[in-house]
Amino acid sequence: MMDNVCSVLVRPAGLQDLENLVLGNAALAWETEQRRLDYSRLRLGVLALLQDHQQKGWYFVAETSSSSAVPVVVGQLLVTFEWSDWRNGNFWWLQSVYVQPAYRRKGVFRQLYGYVMNEARARQETVCGFRLYVEKENVDAHRSYDRLGFHRAPYWMYEYEFSDHTIPSRSQDFSGRPIKGS
Image (cartoon, rainbow, N blue to C red; front, side, top):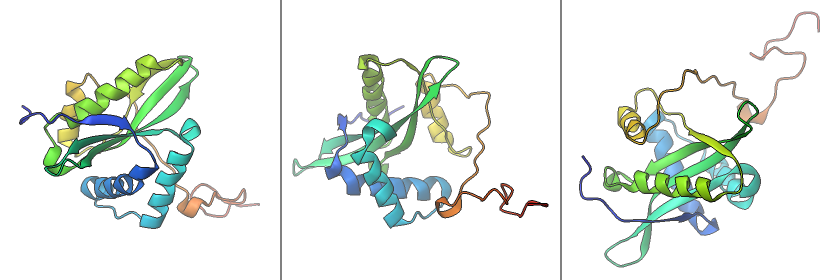
């Protein structure tokens, strides 16, 4: 059960939200993976998306008023997209989902999700579904997504990360080891 539901205003994020988004992403990485992100790189990454949302994706924020009536960002959600040739449409990936601890279990994520669902309905493009990934141990998130109708996909997620954006040369295999005979 949700404790008293918190009414929030959900809106597309803008440059004025940069610092809140960076702090939310840093908190998310720490809470879910105990991973400290490089602040400068993270800030540049969020800024790049905010400046090129047509190609990269969109952030949405949920804000509420504090006792001083100044809007406070209490949640965020990033939408990126992946073309599916099998379905002739885009999957929208829900990423960087973060709600401030004091506002959890108060319907903030549900309102962010509802806003994004309405955006998908309103777009003049084919959206064939939503996808997201979640840490295996994040049972609370599993339950939240289950309640919204998500189900576990039959896929495993694999990743090959390029350190510092350096793509291995042709003379290296994917582990970075030299390839014999090259």
